[in-house]
Length: 626
Image 1 (tube, rainbow, N blue to C red):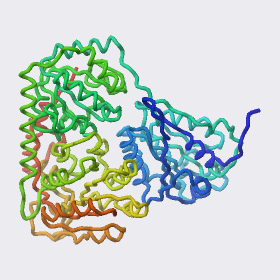
Image 2: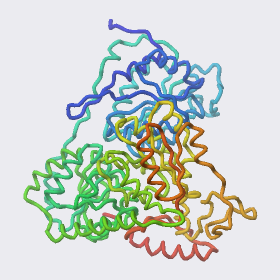
Image 3: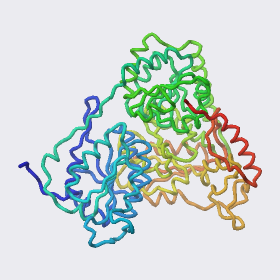
Image 4: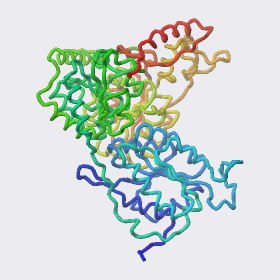
């Protein structure tokens, strides 16, 4: 009979997690760096007690359940999905607060382990506090809401079920294809129940992240397609960075002279100053990338899922004979746009394609065109960086100052609002982690929590968090966690006087920015932007709020003061929040691109009617790729 150890389910859970390792390319590391948690009656006597007696599994106290999932997601992103943290909550609202974070992780395909408490499995005391009752089933709780936003979900109604569930959870978490949020719902009574677990269950386990290779015949066909093309372009996605394929991508580009556009997740795949780096592509893309994309006859997608921003709502590629080669670990993405699917790891696939393409390069005239567009774009970025707007600075110049004054090896973090689009265009990415953008879910509130996770994953790098006033008001509480843990963050709060991004979108739809400004009602009505200055702004003191959470604060009024604040924050060893107002109406151009947001088909407003006509005209450019 095998040896066993009597432990509570929660104790066994943590003992198992401590012994999980991953390996890729011969490098092993623990998969879990610890656990975030907020305790309530649903987990305090189970996981809470287990953590108390296991100080070698690091526990981090946080202030918001959604935020801790964002922090774990950001940590996993920096670690290229090879390491993450677990997150535990009580039942009820503590659990459901994590759902947005779970969606963000799963949409971005980043591993996080969620351990929400659940209702009593033994049922005799039901309904318990915070239980969702159903007239149709006694086997339901709010944790069932996690099912559509989790890549793996289980409810453990007996302590021995842990033995079968945890290996499946690890299989999903460590899979480059299937990873995302994994939710194990843990009834509060079962967490504290004991079972004789086999000792073998707690042995050290190494999960090998293998670099799967593409089919040899498909690779040969891909090489033939590339050789036959006249105007190929690469779309580099997040898969390039997660596969640590940036060096081989550079080799591939220098050998073939094929230019590169980047998705939000793929920005930084090629350094901004490489002569064939065209920058962001699509709805928030650059003049260089979008002009070459328009007439490309072959699109080589590497590790991209082709979101509507990347394809400019299927308007970016207008060559009637355009074809797609998709290099991706996920078959689901490789087949998109009826592409030639090259299912395999980005790094080894590019290495093998390089051999098959020996001696090939694009025509010299096409390379020269790409380099000219690269140079023209860099001049445009410099122009935007150098303009000084008054009385309020523009977002473009604030991006420029941060880009120029931040540490070369630092990490910029952002997620939502008008910043992602401007940053995708303007940020000069100097290394693969320099541009940390959560844009799969574009989740407001990710920024500060995500920045916390980034700094935990990269403690030797400076982390710069750009957050708008709208996102800051949604989720800033984990500034206190950064202070508590002695983690230095530089938070740059751009006060736009409301929701700048949606205000701009609303105006483009003929809706005057309705409901997007932080203002008092005027004659009982929330007015739009046409009211101009004839409104009273809300007197929100962001600086005072940040100080109350323990951060140092620097308030700025001009670009010069902002530059000085960035230097002061960099010299400090404490979390600093820099607050500056910027002009909500000065934007960055669209550069030959479009994003499909459908306009009301009927309206009594002439401005909406005009916007509908423009939408119908642009809609004609959308394509099916068959």
